[in-house]
Image (cartoon, rainbow, N blue to C red; front, side, top):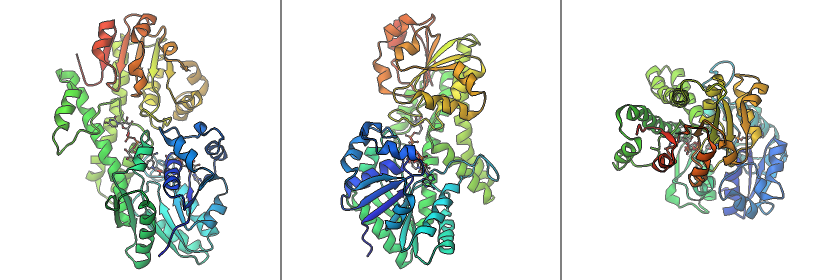
Length: 466
Ligand code: NAD
Ligand code: UDX
């Protein structure tokens, strides 16, 4: 039976960093080395001040502080870490392809392939390779092919162990996950590799929560779990528009639906649209896989989740323009929040980016305040869209570090992220400092609309028409 004492993880991002920090914390007998090509990122993980680690997650700095330099190491020496590890996690990015066949839908597996080739080149003994990245179903066979044809005789077992953590709650999710999923070959060697990984997780996770499957079920389950979750958000968001037309209230509808135990209350919060690095990319990938098997109806079914989400973001921006008397030209609009959800500094695919882009087309002047997102990231996100020059983005958008300054002199405020602190602001002070009529567009149904109306604000909350 393989007993794991040294783990390496390739990719020190939002998944690799927190996941390995938790394994190191819970398994002090295992040496965990997280490697990345990005020197700046590794330097930040090693920063003497643990509050400067590159991923913001509540509770993460304490986990890192406990294990770092004990049995948790961050390094740019990818080959050294591969060489010494018995088990190698691949946790590199798998974004949507931006070129060639499958552009805009398929997952770009270039970084996965690079990892596989590097492992094959460096490995001098048998290793267990763990797919931690979210991958299209059947990727394990491609990895196996590369390893067996370019390796130097070492034996490899490929496991699929997708990560289900959500950003903002990563530490809780890793500490007490609903389940850990491990897929592997059904051969005796495959089963032994699965058991070796089960034994790692069993250091803190009850055995009944560790599910084992074949490798294809595991790969496909990750894509489809995200598709199901995103579908719930698009479903509730599709009803916000209907609520606004009919004077139904989406919060009441969500409560009424969610108390049905077959449906359940979670993931029914109406919003300006889902964001994050996973939902859109994974559904697009599912759509692409279905199409490539000729399953047109299956592809169309899931694609609608994305179409609905794009509609929701655009609809929010258009509503703002309409309510601001059909022009936002030169008007100051304050954005509260830029991250794709609260308690993270991640902005990938955040609805705020697309709402800002739409308003900038209409020549609005946007002031952004987010408690954890840095100024440079906000410009990076807008520049990445390539809709206008970086100079134009700089001219159209200002980033401030004080919410009261953000709202001063504004025609309207848009709430894009559900940060808790927004609820506790001195809203009278904000009202007094704004142009009148002072408008609030609450894209998260976060604020107390009644209280704000009593102050004098005109409030539009998503999915209500009161
Ligand atoms: P990320 O971009 O934050 O991190 C990936 C890291 O891998 C980067 O730092 C990059 O420099 C590094 N990298 C890429 N190629 C490399 C190579 N050849 N050698 C060494 N380092 C390399 O991405 P992430 O958010 O951590 O996501 C990683 C994977 O996990 C993706 O497949 C994603 O779909 C999946 N996932 C993400 C989440 C999430 O919430 N972010 C949740 C579950 C699963
Ligand atoms: C998601 C999955 O939840 C997680 O299991 C997977 O591993 C990675 O992808 P994440 O993207 O980090 O996690 O956050 P999540 O909490 O799922 O939120 C995604 C988006 O949906 C956010 O923009 C969030 O604000 C939005 N959302 C979520 C809603 O608009 N309403 C909801 O009820 C729930």
